[in-house]
Length: 407
Image (cartoon, rainbow, N blue to C red; front, side):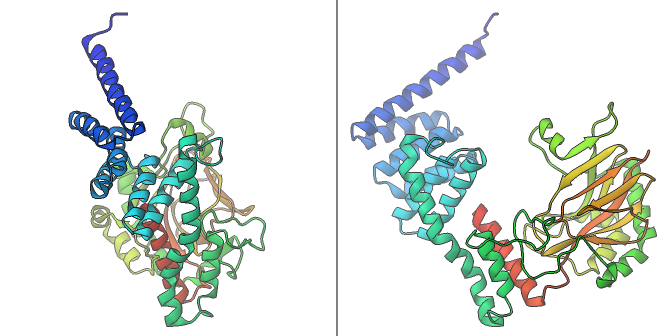
């Protein structure tokens, strides 16, 4: 093999960076943080988009007592690589030193959650020895502060509506924080994110409990025509699920056709609360029907509404949803023979123009064993047992948890 000049340049650059890092580590070990800052500032000037280098500069600045500069460096490293858990960890230390404990707790939570998602920092064996003390400090502060910070989200609503009115939401928060163990009375039900106690526990609900679905179904012919137009061109369609690697697909989708990969696509009107204006404009009948419905609206979370397109041979494997506070509504538009939905062990065959409502915290799956695409309009609705005050409290709480995790 002949190695070209680009390879030799890469090796030389790597050696140059490692030399600088080694020199900085020696300076810090010898109690000379200012020298480490100079070395790392020089190398960062040459490689300003290297998150690890910028993080190392932040550590040197912190050791040298330059808190504002250290904070900027760690924030820069996180902007370059949001998954760099140690940058979040060190940023939290700076924030604590600056007296901003609440922001520090949020940064600690992001550090620990990112590391543990990769399988790190779960035990002494999965935590580097030099980080043991810092990680334990992070976990202690999270344990102390997170219940208070999330509880503050509900405090003004409890004052306005009374604890009795929001008792179930307060219990849901305690369960989310793992301070109490909340379990459904139905062993088939499991919420991956938050369980609200005291709500009816059943796989399917009568669509008549949701009067707005009747008005929606009355528009099904117009909605179906708009769906068919986009199905023919496939304009605006995208995978419903996003995977980091092809291997992950096997855990969610299966194809009964050996020569064809499973395919579940969507034409989104809303996703994670974001409105797709162009799609609303392209499908005015669908848009008008949706905007007339009492949608679940939670910033960066809901609604989630789309034409859901399941290709022939595709099987959506059994899974459970995030919370029993909201239910899933399907308006079937195109239903070939051989298509069905199973929720909590009960099978339902879609019928075009007839809405079906189910609780997706029950294990559920769907399949298309037909020869053409199955299309439904998929959306979510509040559980009918929730009061207006509870819906407001849950919206506030879920939004706040998302902001806490991302901030």
